[in-house]
Image (tube, rainbow, N blue to C red; front, side, top):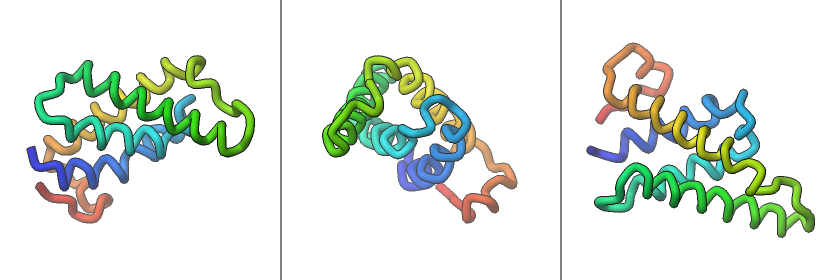
Amino acid sequence: MKFGAWFTILKRVAPVVLALTPAAPLAPFIAVAIQAAEQIPGASGPTKLAIAREIVKIGVNATNAQIGYAKVDPALVDEAIENGINTVVAIVNAKHASNVAFDAHLGGVED
């Protein structure tokens, strides 16, 4: 798989997909985490998911440390993180596999 187009779709789709979910505040962390995990050669889906979850938690912890208090408890949003990652990956995979007119809205992304 060529990741260039997949990552372009990911960057554009993730914030939109997550906007109306409990994971909305975590959207930037989720997009970066998915991209990082997808680049691990030979990693299984569950391994990529576990790594992406940990990356999101690191981002949340860093944000909490920066503001000086726990605005988001990573332990409490674990399910939202996992569901957000799975939802975004499923939609990006579906879009990447299809050649529908939606490409025009994404700037003509091609693989």
